[in-house]
Length: 330
Image (cartoon, rainbow, N blue to C red):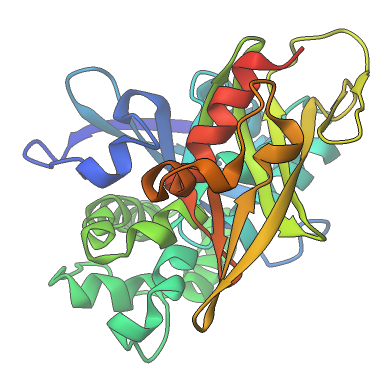
């Protein structure tokens, strides 16, 4: 297996909008190349990734000179992602992450990449499709919008064909073309983070990892929704207890599962119809220990308990409330 490291993007400015979700010291931006689309019948033969080492962005590539080196490649990649909390990808939630997880499992490598820790740039762009008005959501389409020009002209399918030929010939020219395709995918994906500045804050909340500090440690929200007069929140943790824990009441419920390492919260809500819109609020009349009465609050105070407007989560106030609640959990 070959390992290649290069310093890149010396003048690149990490997007400020992204840094509140993913600190640049704590991410790995990655892309995988495979011998086919089936994660049970084909292999990962190349992984390119970018990390930040405190002073520079480093682009690295792990390349299998034959498919028999896949396990070695995956172990090397595991050592990298074990040092980072977040992932950045393009279509990674649908392809790169489940594919990598499957291959890790096939090789009995104890590693599972969580989709909740991933920012998938393709999904983020799709949430803003009305603004961008793209014909498709390919990486090269985003690159064109941002004025990025490639040297590499081959497709992913052509890259697979090149590798199958490379296995028989070990041609250095074929190797160069395969590595260049992956190199430019990774390099320009990093530059495409600029697209975040054109996206709505709401879409970033939907797709970026949301990390919360609790009295038990760090947690990342994997699901948040309102159903049946309940705000339901699932939070992945790094495992703060050694056993399951249940706290039930008639108003607020939280459950910790040691097997899934998740906290599940259920918080009572109620709806107010104002004009043509429906506003959903935390039902503090039910859960407040200080006997706060919702109707006695002024309008700004009431808005601090707003969790949803017309089926869309209102993230700023919702997250503030959840943060406070996690610290106060019994």
